[in-house]
Amino acid sequence: MASSSAEEDRVNALKEYAILDTLPEQDYDDITSLASQICQTPVALITLIDEQRQWFKSNHGLDLRETPRDLSFCAHSLDKPDELLIVADSREDERFSNNPLVKEEPSIIFYAGVPLVDSNGFSLGSLCVIDHKPKQLSPEQLTALRTLAKQVANLLALRKANEISRKREASYRALSTDLEQQVQQRTKELEAANLELGTLNGDLVQANERLVRSNNNLQQFAYIASHDLQEPLRKIQSFGSLLSEQYASVLDGNGLDMLKRMTTAGKRMSTLIRDLLSFSRISTQREMSVPVPLSTVINNTLADLEVTIAEKGARVVVEPLPVVLGDALQLNQLFQNLISNALKFHKPGMSPVIQIKADWIAADHLPQGTEPPEKAIAYHRINVVDNGIGFEEKYADRIFQVFQRLHGSSLYAGTGVGLAICEKVAVNHGGAIVASSQLGEGATFSVYLPV
Image (cartoon, rainbow, N blue to C red):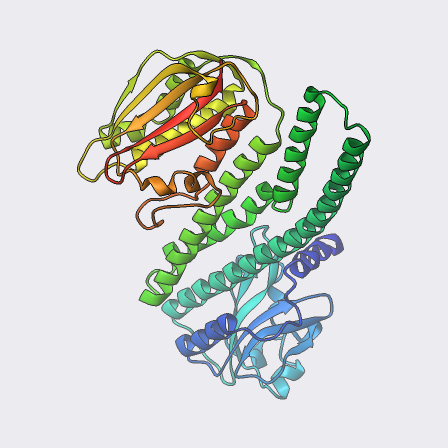
């Protein structure tokens, strides 16, 4: 018999699944139906045992939804989560011979149960089969019963992960509402202060504009709190892979296809959340203003992309690059996204060729419509030129917007966030970024940074 403390921990673990007294679900009913067919028994149950009762999540062949715990066969296996409980004839077993469930309806004579054990080793209940006459199961039937019990445990784990995700999302929505209210209040205070101090010099006005931009970014991204959503996504991917590996022989083509789609969607969602978090951090983190050699930034980026460059047979030509004032980590993100895109959108059957070169231009020679947030006499122009598939010139502004993609995800992987990150980094450094291209003729991305 387990200690009272261990039993309390077990019951608490069961309640974390939020499954007791829920309505029937097809996934669980399919398992008990299959167990009944395989073991050739009229009854198959998924039982969960709390302090006072055994409750049936699925009750194939039995009208009862629960019984007192002290009448339960399954309760006898709680202390032995690694062992099957098999009773060939309960009338000859002193543990059960006087049990009302044996002597009266539903007349349990034969019983075989596999404990449902969670990842922490707690036995939550059993998957069991019952007959009204003495019986023996073959080794193949016992193996199948164990496999189905693992499937039940996986379903329970997925349910728990979804429940955790639901609670976190509710918490984040509440946090988002609170943050939005704070941002609105702060914006009103800034507007009132600007009305009273309308004669402030240009530097203070510029500082206020940066603060308003920061608040707007906070308002846009506070609701996601995305790093905490990664954990349930990882669990969904992990359980999907586990189901594919363990039950490939049991599932039909449609089932395997559904699992593959679920895993792929989880991976894409995880990538999207990571990219959004990167974009949000660039929007809110404090800028650094230290000398950064762009040649070092490019060399580090090429080292990170070494495998991809080799696989695609790409050639990267780097000309001398300047030293700029800024944040090395942000600049690394900018050029890694640009070079990654140049490698990704190459022409089929043609090796990518990428040129990275720099010069400087006077402020009055900036491209028409380009307005960096900080005025300077001159700007470094760093061009990243490729020989890829290019794009139509009319899309040159659209590609820097979040989630904007010119090609389907089935052709080219991505989330539509990378170029938005590039523009944010350039703006954070007092500069700008523009793109020029013709469809099928490659593309040139020009980054302008103050001299």
